[in-house]
Picture 1 (tube, rainbow, N blue to C red):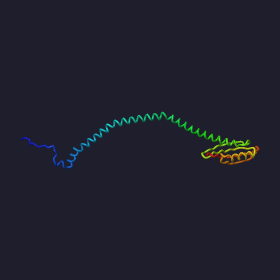
Picture 2: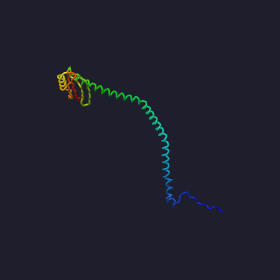
Picture 3: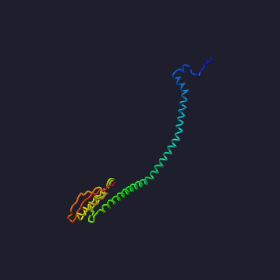
Length: 185
């Protein structure tokens, strides 16, 4: 007996295409293949961009190493430069303070009678005023009064404070403490 001939149809039956599994198979064979192709393009693009990113990373690493080498080589120079700047700033402020002190001391010596002698002198200055504290001695009361009067009449002197006057028994004269304030404006 010969085998019975059967018809084989590769087309899905209507019932299969309307079932859930049939719809999924239909979607995968039509729209799904575009999703798969798009995903493959993304993967291939990521793979190829990896070479560009590796090269960029290598270049940036080289630039960072070169920058670090430059920084390390100039660190000593920068330290010396900053130290020199601070010394120059200090010297400049010292010169300006010395100039103030010299001017103020010159003003005191211009008003100094012959018989008044400075024993101790201190100088203090800020942005508003300059203060000179002094301990001095005078052989006569007249010279002491003249000195204080001359200082109070000087226009550059803001205030003169007498903190102590005493008669010295070792010699015929007076010892006194003064605070002289100059205006810096």
